[in-house]
Each structure stands twice: as C-alpha cells, then as structure tokens.
Length: 174
Image 1 (tube, rainbow, N blue to C red):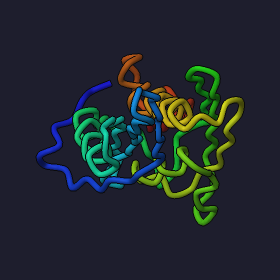
Image 2 (cartoon, helix red, strand yellow):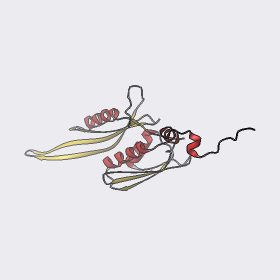
Image 3 (cartoon, helix red, strand yellow):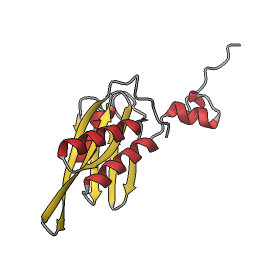
Image 4 (cartoon, rainbow, N blue to C red):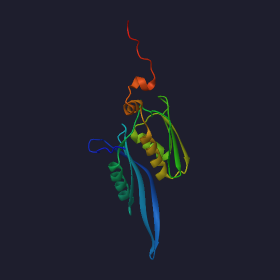
C-alpha cells in the first residue's frame, strides 16, 4: 500500500455519505456532521477520507483533506480489474468481478463512488452483509488494494510473463 503524493495528481472529490449526530445537552440538541468522501484521478489513484465537524461544509472539507492524505494506487487492466476479488471490512462484504468492455459499472452506493474515482469502467459488483457506507467503502478499497496483475506477480516470483502464463516458448531453429 504505497501512498502517493497528491501534488502532481488531478484529484476529483465525490461525497459518499453525510451523517447527522445529535447530542442532547441541557439547552436542547447539539448537531454535528460526519462526511465520507472519495477522491480519485480516474487513472488508478483513489483515496477515502472521513471528516467530522459542526457544519456540513466543514465536515466535507475535512473529509477531502483526509482523503487526499490517503491516496493509493490500484491495479486496473483495460478498464476493468485483473481478477475476481472478495473483501470484508467489519460486517460488510464486497465481491468485484471483471467484465468485458461495454458492460459498464454495475455497482451501487459507496462501491460505485470508489470504483469511478479509481477509473474502473467495466466491472460487476455485489455488496453483501452490512450496507453501512463506512464499511462498504473501506471493503471496496481493501479489495482494490488486494488486486495483483500478471506482470507484478511474475516479477514477485522472479519469472517472465510467458513462464507465469504457461505460454509455449518458440522452438529453437535447427
């Protein structure tokens, strides 16, 4: 999980969820807000942040700042993900499946926000278990970070891409 400097990236922010919390005090209720924000450049970089404040706009601004501090790189292959992945965070579970070009982004809520910000164009998703937006977003990010493409795996194993994929080598000429 390599953090990225956000100075050279053109990040766009996207609000996922705002939560209003009431604290009962002697004079009545005090409201505060929390905001989950996703930032991404649409080219493999995405970050998630949480901001809390007494005003909605302040909470969103804090969430954007937090998300920009937590930008990571994810593996995208031809507009989709390299393989099927299943991730769990808390009671939320997320299943991501690669899809052929033209399928589109079949996802909802927090999963859609994270995948669009990362730049994934074609993918099938299913959110299972808790639909708490905090945990769904974190499970999606965890799934994207767990992805490995063939080049990275071949380098990790010290093999060539052809050896990893099992493609036959050209026969030597006699």
